[in-house]
Image (cartoon, rainbow, N blue to C red; front, side, top):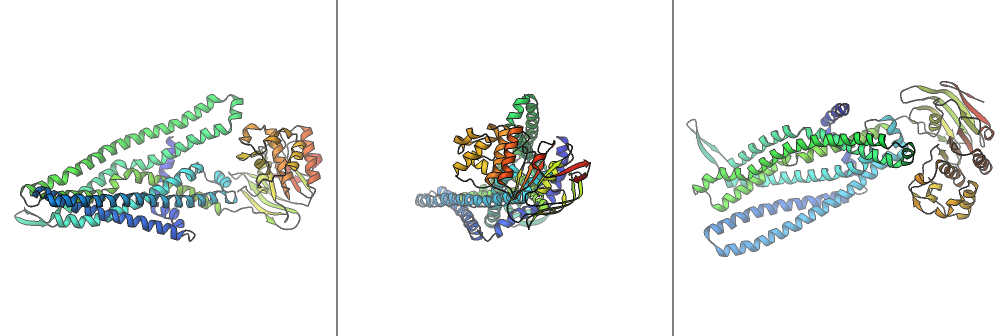
Length: 578
């Protein structure tokens, strides 16, 4: 945990210097997107107009307070009745403006969140960036949290802080002029000379707010770093729980509950330790901000009281000055009142910016992009390496014609699975050229198949849309000895937990028969099958996909009869085709 703090502290410090640039990079694409430009800017204009209306209503209310207290001081009952009716108008308009301001702000928020979520999802999923990112960028932890939660927080806090800041600026301008006018000049004798300070209450509010802001920043600065850590540790703990749920079978068979509990307790311990630090800093900041806020109510009254007792101002003007002072001081103290929000906002910007930087870097990485031309599969690999640079394969070339079937063999760890991933075009540490047949798609079947959430029918046709050809499905299910699953084809369930590995591999192999590919890549895709079932399914593949180019990874010679070529790893980094 200490190492995490040190590493993340360096990263956070670096990002602090570029906070505005990072924020602009994240928000600019939305506001210049022509697809919804008018909607976004129109809603923003509506919210800003209502914000300006609220400032005007606050000024109206300030004048109303002055008139009310003057009427009470002079016992003018007629003016009092008119002022009560006027208050109904002020409060009614304030309620309408406040409600619609929040409503339109939330509308803008959900539109912006939808756009940014889709944008990040597209970048994450395009060209298998999600796969490359986890291999190449170890700074970007828990991308699921960044897309699901950080985007929501970024949008809501950015809008909230932006609008509150604009409101504070408008309030400051409006009520500073009013406070300057109402408070008048302060005349005092200093060093035998008369000193005149025009609008002295404004200057007092300014000094009061500046001192308060400096102290707040000094007390609350660690909150930025602690919020960053808290989001990471919460995400780590949640990921641990999700991973346990997804691998419940394996953990139960190993009886690994004790170790899993230890891991989860350690992760939750990070959450708790950091949260205690957050609590202590928030407590210190809370004491100061509450004291500062309470004092700001009494302060202008004490300062102005001598002028009231000297009958230099009326009670109404006194109330107006106190209210105007509070408005000016509140606007100037916006940073103090929203420091926790600003700290949280910065941590969210840091996390999303790190994620965006990772996506940008992955997007420009060299890729082994297959070309689609002709009828053969042409492979010319200059090198395939591990992430640490260890060479697994170098200067290997071969050509497979329509109907060729290549088996890849070699000792465990020599790079067979990595080679298959390079051929699929997803391994980021591969260099060379690939050419696939122009007709037909490429299908990759792994040792542990992926079954998406949804119905069994959708899982069988994945990644293509499902078709409702029950007769063909029934024939294939019987071929794979899965006929017992036919009544459950349209049932939604956690099929990756319900089906055994052998059943999952058979479902995956049927995908090749349901969606015939031009190139079929298999990484020990039949390792959990008995020899009879394996033979039956390979025979079906050869019979029904006569023109398909197949590349299979295998440890032994069981699959040798189904292939006409073999690529063997004879020594580390050396491969031979026979």
